[in-house]
Length: 405
Image 1 (tube, rainbow, N blue to C red):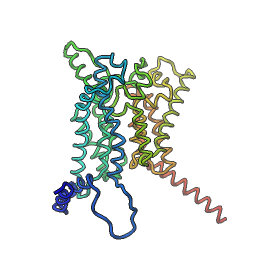
Image 2 (cartoon, rainbow, N blue to C red):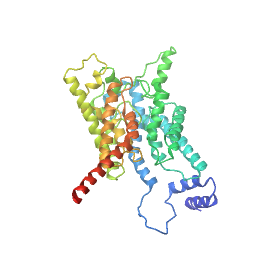
Image 3 (cartoon, rainbow, N blue to C red):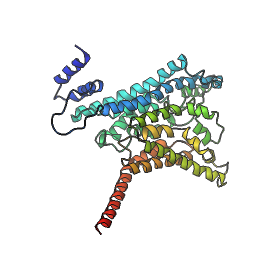
Image 4 (cartoon, rainbow, N blue to C red):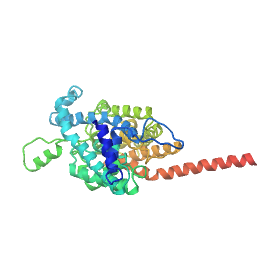
């Protein structure tokens, strides 16, 4: 008896029981549903929500693999700075891969294990089918957190994000906040020392710091990010190509801009991601960057100001530092929490980019504001769509009056 037939037997055995949603979820995840409709008009397509989610996961896998190698590379390069002289030659090595797997895969396992357990629990209790929304969230969460975040903290945050960020609103399709960003926001406010600073982005840096504090004679590991360096008005040790290719410290999957761009093109080509939201987010970020550059050029702010470092960053460089590009492609385009109207998407995305750079500059203690900007605009997305629709209705009413006059 094949696996498909065994699953179908189990599905029929538990049909009508509380455990039916769990078996149905496993069956339809591996195979197309074997149920068809027999009446009424229906749109026949080759995909469903699970397959749509899988496409997004496919776009994220290159970022995950790169993040695995980069985790090992940043660890060894922090110990031996000579490795940074030839990053490409020292990047794709077995040592980096093994180190990365040892630290990144547990994040993925905890994210999916805890999140899906909560999803299955709610499905069994409520008696509905397991929803597919966490398939993408489970992959996003490990990519947007520091590498050494304690696993128990991640588990607590995932439970909070799934329950408070989604289930209390009715589940997938009903939530007003992006669940992955809700998890990150919980981590940021509940455990800020593990989400900011120059010790959380490189594997082993926190342990080395603790050993030094205990009197051990070991070298410290610093993992200061580019944003952190700018926020302190200090020099940046990475060139533009390092920033573009991703050979820099940062969250697990947010460093390689070239892979994010490839993922964006893939999502746009498959019509999963909204190109309007992606481009408008980048336009908003560039606009805010230009405004800050103008303020610096006009001499309205001096080098002694704590805001000078990030204000003086060339406006285009904001797109290759931090997580603005990752947020624009994989977070802002969430079809559930984003604006639905075409004009609303332009407004929604522009404000995300605009506010992200504003928070980045005016919050030197934590110079990144993409997740806060997206969560804020998640709340305002229905309002944006409402006024766009009302504007359309008013214009149509005016045309109707002209025709009947």
